[in-house]
Length: 108
Length: 116
Image (cartoon, rainbow over all chains, first blue to last red; front, side, top):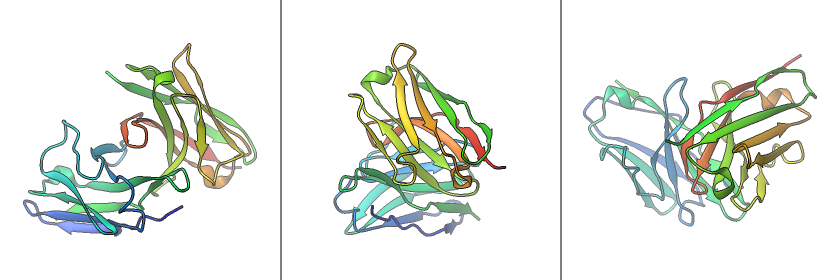
């Protein structure tokens, strides 16, 4: 199965823009989904199919792909955005779901 | 409203077995895709298994041959049978409804601790 690589941590000041990358050879050929997980809670879907956003998710959250890297972008970051973020794909070659290692977003 | 409620976790010795349950409401499990995802303490998410609407199943390599996913359509419950448990299987186990591989709804999880 393929590997999805995320930086362990990203820090950003309130009101600024956070970019969380997710790299891997599989990125260009499979749909990428993103999850937010706050301490003690279950993950929550924030972006699906690379760029789509569930209706309950603020427009400040967006996804993009370029080459072998997918990026979750959070604009006008708020204290409440502090969480772990995971990218995820379905690897159709191995028939396995693959998660990235997760990125801890810290709001300074 | 869609809800998933896991149960069945607990403390179990290495080599032992447990059966986890995921009680679903707000949707019909036999017409949907349900996965199990686990998270070891302080670690990231790891997909474990999926049962498709048609009943087919798939497993992560780390659990294949030891875990079995199934469902009871009359009770709208999805199960995960955990056999030959190892210390590395210690984790919170979440069930999630997918479309099929993007997980829109999650339960709150049940903790499995494998220790002697």
